Amino acid sequence: MIVWVNGAFGSGKTTLVDELRTRWPEALVYDPETVGFLLRNMVEVPTGDFQDLRLWRRQVAALAVGLVEEYRRPVLIPMTLVKPEYVAEIFGALEAAGIGLHHFFLDVSRDELEQRIEGRVFFPDDPEREERVRQWVKNRIEPCRAATGTLPGDTVFLDGALTPAELAQLVLARVRAGETATV
Image (cartoon, rainbow, N blue to C red):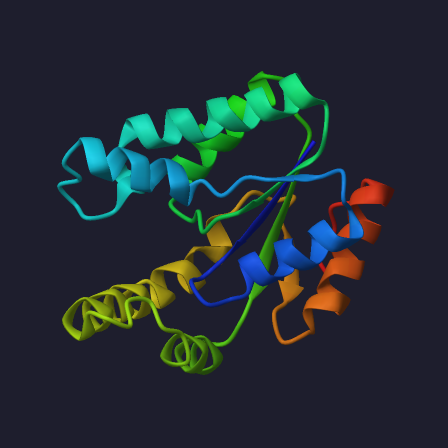
């Protein structure tokens, strides 16, 4: 089974997955960004977003399937994924492989996201790169928030204002019950 934690940059995906991991020690954590960073070191990413690489999407799905099949353990994935065609491609590949998927989306206000992003440090030794990354992340807030209406119907929307412990409790209860209604 895969638990995909989705949301805008700064919504708390990684923090929630870290909290889930402490409560669910047998789960593996897989961050698809690592696949993107690997590809970025090998090939040009014309748009600047490695999600636009078809190879990234194929490899993300293939590695997720491989982790579940090979290790027979749940996999926790913190990753922003909002373009409908990319969601359909990756989630479709998981479904075709017979992998159970629980999809959660952390809903956080724009103001809160901007505040969280301002509080993060990406590249402390490179102020110019720091500002470029911060702006890139901020520019993705609205597309992420707007995409909530296009996510699969069984997506569980979580109030990102809750604490990581509260969110983890909700996710684990939902996963264990096999439910997919809105929270």
